[in-house]
Image (cartoon, rainbow, N blue to C red; front, side):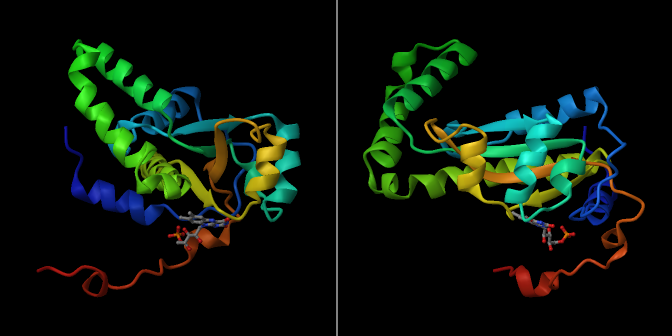
Length: 215
Ligand SMILES: Cc1cc2nc3c(=O)[nH]c(=O)nc-3n(C[C@H](O)[C@H](O)[C@H](O)COP(=O)(O)O)c2cc1C
């Protein structure tokens, strides 16, 4: 069922990069679970889903991360903190995992997907894009970030995307250094504090006529 266009635009106008979260207000479990589904439902190139999402609830861990996040208060004060991880490389096992999942979900023979597996192999695994695979992977993760923020706004949940952090320090603290994933971007989710003066600031966006060209 479609939502009203003004509902969508109102939510996007209402959303802003929240600087001060109300530490007392928690996102209810059912709404949080819905937001987790929006992460899971995010589309990705080939459907490879080269990501993981760490939901950090441990206050001590958040305290540890904050100094490596430009000391931003959102890290400790938001309701749910998500560290979005991107996969470091794409290997044959990743193509195989996707083929097996597709075969199971669609009740087809895995062998019928050999052509698809081959496309992934010659493009991302053996092809020139292997050289830029970390960037490719993080491109996919940013789609999940956008999905999460828009979905949250539609549920009247505040967010702040955070690139102001040190990925090497996050990787060390979160024990990711020897894993297949690295920290890519962070999203703080929760509810704005009444004291956050940023909520009242006018949006700064270039005119659609400058950004969108019809040909
Ligand atoms: C990928 C990304 C990273 C960002 N990193 C930070 C950050 O570390 N700290 C912060 O306070 N805001 C951060 N922002 C918020 C932007 O500054 C903000 O979205 C932008 O100025 C537009 O304002 P608005 O979101 O309030 O409309 C980030 C936004 C994005 C999309």
